[in-house]
Image (tube, rainbow, N blue to C red; front, top):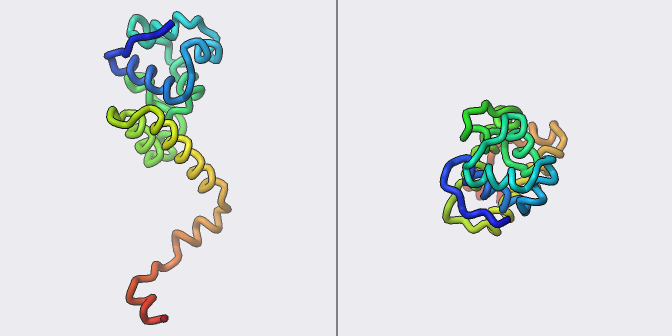
Length: 144
């Protein structure tokens, strides 16, 4: 089933997140344990999923908690509160109407890899970088 581009907030965000994530309605439906026609109904605004399903969709599609649920008035859970700067970037990326889907996917993958690398660094290394004095151009010139 090919869905037309939706017009309401939840439907539009679901449609675009599904495309950015590389899912078809059928593959997303399979992941969620629902019929493809159900995903189509959500994307056209005919119906909305319950909160638990919205949170599951956010997880499957790899979007930030609250990216979809905020449109339906459901409270976001998890990562958004722990890392608001990360969720803000991903939300802006997903919401940018001028950025082609292929570029959204690339930026999302790159961002996830960079944050994974940052999270994998030992805590002591992260702290030492944060507390290290920054050198100015004048300091570097005086040394050399």
